[in-house]
Image 1: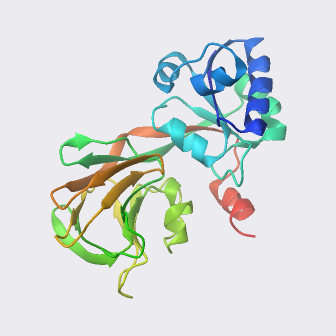
Image 2 (image 1 turned 90 degrees about the vertical axis):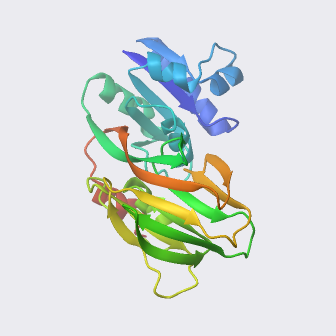
Length: 270
């Protein structure tokens, strides 16, 4: 088996665990460490694109941010080890890292596929979103005015700090913090959640993934950004149109059987 290894850079706990994982894996199989981690350990490194081509399984060590960063490029199954905070998307905590890897090597796992969003800025395809895409004001305390369309039909004219379009995976992240619902990952839908809307009537929507959402800025807007999974950002203007729908690509996670509902109960209900 060929492994990719991605660690959160410049964090001693993640780097230390990464070295232990690397030592364990190289005794058994080929390993392709991500170049930032490799630089800190003095070994040959690889880009995420190279890892995606070469590896069968990619191990991530860090928090949810590290997983989302990897998912920007990685399409192979991800085995995620939490060495950060909550680690909602991770499969095992750091103390169970080696035991979890042994279980993967023995083939005692399932692969869970989750939806991603396909995003266009006019005709330019942007990176897919595993969690969410937001259109938001770049100026603090300034209201953003926009229109939302589903299949070319206007369904909301919004004054707010912005709007979040989230996958079921992203329903437990940013969208949840603005009052969006928690969605089972098997539901083929996306959440449209306003950020601090000016009207009480503005509420989250659930839209099928096979529908096309368009976001258009109204003329009075200034300094607006589109942000994908907190990793990619680009300035947009009133001349641009953002188009979002379900992607043909999937986020793929290695799971041992713990249910989504159990994860919510353990990590979100306290």
